[in-house]
Image (cartoon, rainbow over all chains, first blue to last red; front, top):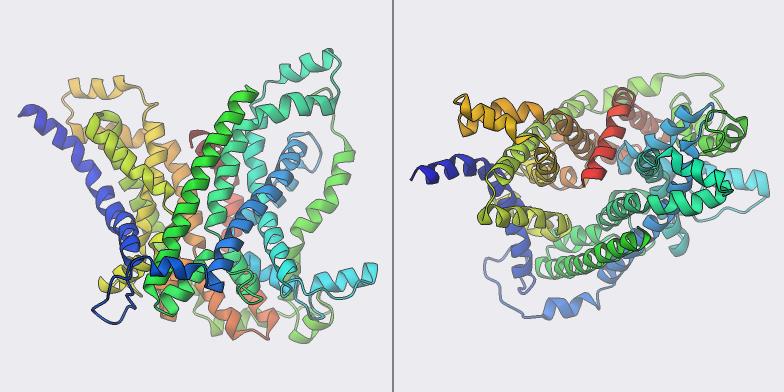
Amino acid sequence: MVKWKRHLQYQWFLLPILLIYTVFTIFPLLKSVYLSFTNFDGYQKTYDFVGLQNYARIFTDNAIVSGISFTLLFAFASTLVITILAIPLAIVLDRNFYTKNIHRAIFFFPSIPSGLLLAYIWGFILAPISSGVLNDVLHTLFGMKAQPWLSDPVLAKVSTVMVAAWAATGWHAVLYLAFLQSIPKDYYEAASIDGASRLQQIRYITLPLLAPAMTVSVMLLLTGGFKVFEIPFALTRGGPGFETHTITQVIVLRGISETQYGLASAMSVVFFAIVLVIACFQVKLMQRREERIQ
Amino acid sequence: MTNEHKRSWLLDLVMLPIGLITFFPFYYILINTFKTMKETAASPLHLPKQWVFTNYVTVFQETPLLRSFGNTLTITVISVLLMVLIGAMAAYPIVYNPGRVNRIVMLYLLAGFMIPFQTTLIPLFQLMTDLQLVDRLYGLIMLYLGGAVFVFFLMMGYMKTIPRELSEAAIIDGCGIAGIFWRIILPLLKPITVTCIIFQTMWIWNDFLAPMLFLNSRSNATLVLQIYTAKGEFSVNWPMFMTLTVITLVPIFIFFIVMQKQIVKGIVGGAIKG
């Protein structure tokens, strides 16, 4: 009896989180799965089970196919570009130079404001008309003719990834920087006594010891990449056509604007499955790599 | 490295153009807020020939900016504080009353990290409509409280590092189980609380999707939502839109300047724990 009372005194602390998490996360998740087997349209009270019909329709719906493939492309491409840029940036920012602090601030600042706002700013720069600064500059410097940065299917995707990289590289460089600063200085001293060049030191000391940081950074980038919405939405509105529609935008379009709840739910369930598989795979891969290096 | 203490101008020179390009978008919108529409179109890159400040006056007249600032502040402050409290409370029994039940509870909560919010979007939309939480600031706040799972995760990691002797000593002094949390544990969580507050503040202050879906009226809009609306309204008047953007960047810039050290510490702390 006394033991029970003791338990309860602890357990009631869990009540608020369990309530909120169950109502706003678990219940909607289960309901998504349930709705994906129905033809519920949001208006009629009665609806039927349609089996796997919604799942079959996913693959014939242009918007959905584009949404899933662009979101995956964005997640992987932005992760790759940001990682490739952030590691050298962190190594440079770790060195001692006069404008180090101001540079750290400049690279870091774009990760603070909302992606929507940043993408709107870039929208002006990448605009096709004469006030589009990038076209203007490229024309003056190299005599290049105006490029449709946001309305060509390939260029629009590249622009989206580049703007995302501009916004997030500094943040990830700071993360790598923290791990760099925890590498003991004697490692480098020992290596240089043994005659290792600066590049060799980076290759054999710095990069392997950054592996744990990379696990964290890549995980954050991928999961963030799957959630991408604001930057493509503000830059291209998802265009041209459905080319840069993200999964989120398609769910809002099919599910909320057109109230095709069943179809949109089926898509969101498929997306959940994809993310789950990638996440498990990634954790395994990264763990194995870290073990191999250490 | 070998010449650790020597500073070189070389890196300054190499980094200067890269830094300038990175900073360029901010320079670009800032200078154009002081121009007329005509001048922005004609020479977008140059400093204004004549500095005009009318854009700033007009933006304040035409958009309920202060109201939106207030809304954003209210939503952010209340939801972040509640999230931190709820997350810290949840970590307490998991760490101090371990057992099979609480292991299951922990796994149940951590599963939240694997669930993309898009998957919950449609039922959430229905739920919010059914509960009549749409276009209510407190509705949005309730929605955000789901973020407490992230706080719980960080708090749990930190709480494990607090020496048990502290709570054991408090029990001997006659402190109850609830008392230990409120009087001993909670005050000790301060460092990780700062991390949580920074992460969650940046998320909620900047969020666009949830306000877009769940706040319909302009008087309830957040700052980010105000920008979105203005994008349609001032679609031709670029300097006006840029002015609105610059004004909304001001509080963010101040936050950045004041908190830069804390933010960096937060990222690092969060990443190493996470």
